[in-house]
Length: 255
Length: 268
Image (cartoon, rainbow over all chains, first blue to last red; front, side, top):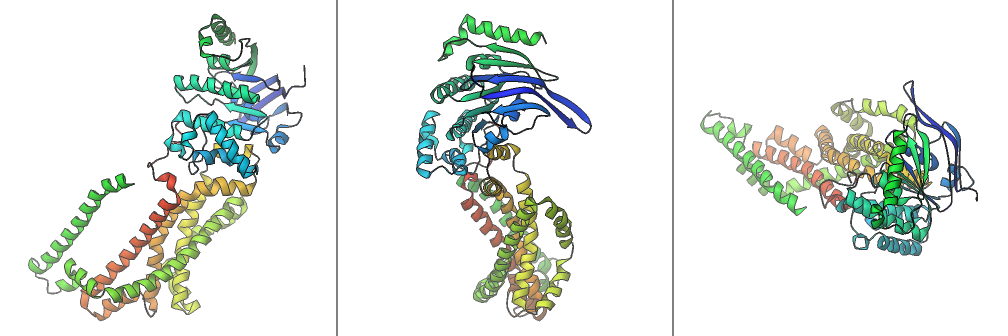
């Protein structure tokens, strides 16, 4: 196998608050290959978001090593290789939709022509071309989250980190966006780390699902999802799909 | 915006009619029920005051424009100072720790005491008006702006951090725009105050201004109490004017706040 795009080695994270310390991650090791779609799945308190933030240099681990693109997360962040999608859309309400997508491009000093070109194609990709000049509050939650995804993709990041991006959305919107994200991903072929607490979602999206168990957060299983791609919504009814969901659910009951 | 105006209009009308009615009834009662010989000195009829205002409109506006021009200049300087102080305090925790308590203390010095001191130092009514207006403006502006800067959402800061954005970019693209509504609230508080400050200095002795008119008509009764009240109402209108102008500026500068009253961005 090639050198992994993201190498997580024996990472532990202890939060201390007024003397009391909470172990959020205990000795987690995962290798993620380039172009892989990987999910971090687990109930709240399993440290999945903590792990994602450590990969993205938003948190420093208490111990252990993380290498992203053969360098530290900080160097990778300074190289502007991360695209992050948060749980809430985190749009700037004083910027229109197209200007929200433009934000990282301005920061990274992408030439204006190129900015316009990318914004136009991304708006089309997420189906929001008609809303380019709207303000965020004029859009529904699902549409706002699409803008967040478009903004993360705008900088053409090496690594896409998604932190429960659809957890605040209803089931219908979520399933639709699952398909949309996979479609976008198949065109761009980024390495994606996707945090979720929804088992079906993780099975539908991923090449591999890393199952984390809580208190303290540990890696309890890595499940290969050998469903063919492209994934279609009919697959959600396949026996293989449901078998994988059951297998993952059972791996929780063991812990 | 027109919808909110429509819903506000009946309330505003009710207030205006109510105040006029109470005023007129009060004035009428003084004359006809209490048979107060000083009735017209204590509370002249509102319609008399309006008539006097109309008759003396040109002279009232001359005075008002002097007051407003000084207050506006002070307001401008004070706003800039308040904004810059807030930015500097947000950049350095040490500066904030050193400066903040003194900002609070500075507001405990009664403006009534400070104004004569400044007036004595600069020996010039024009400068004193500008300085006192600026002094009274900077505090609400700086406290509100600092509050706005500090309440920037953590996720938004994380987003900028993930882009490896520089400090200047973070301020320009995130912190200052998100502090704008707070800055505007500060300006709305400060605008009428800056007019009050200018009037206060005028009462200490300047050649012109609405404050001079108020003082003069109060003591020397040119035109009687009606003219005094006309001057007071004019000065009140100036304060309201300041507030309205800032509110209009807010609407022009922040169009994203117009379409609906609250942003629904975070509840997804």
